[in-house]
Length: 220
Image (cartoon, rainbow, N blue to C red; front, top):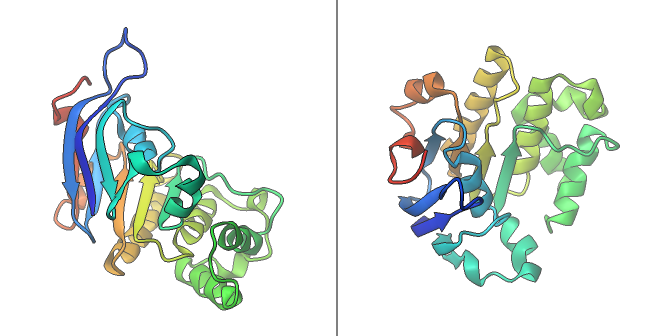
């Protein structure tokens, strides 16, 4: 499903490489927790899988697609099969919650024929269907992240990338987001989540596989 082969990435020569010959295989349907201290490369890994940044060398293959061969014009098409949840939400502030999902379906090429039913069902799954007419500024942090989860899953992606999705949330909201990620995983989505929450990572160790970047052969 996802293969990283001898991947290297350096931002600042003086600081050394973030990744240096990093290799990893992720099977379809796995739930991966990527852990490591600040600066270990968690967000860089997510950004490379999303093709927001490229490795300096090495190969990344996602669902049979070699990312180095995807042209700039083809990046939007590639990303249609990937859902993303960020720590800082990145919602459209001028759109209602319903509108946030509707516009994402439109720009990512999702089917608009059954959009109303799909959006309604997804909001119900996230437990926020009652909030569909509200705007992001009217929501709590936990509610905003649920909207982000709904947005990420609305087009049934094969891969869900989550970059510190609970970083700005209280413990109760964090637990709820983890529960929703587990639901997505049980439905067959491959989940790759970067997190600094080691306690939660340890709690989920029996159902998730952990990749600890601090233990990899690279600079930490």
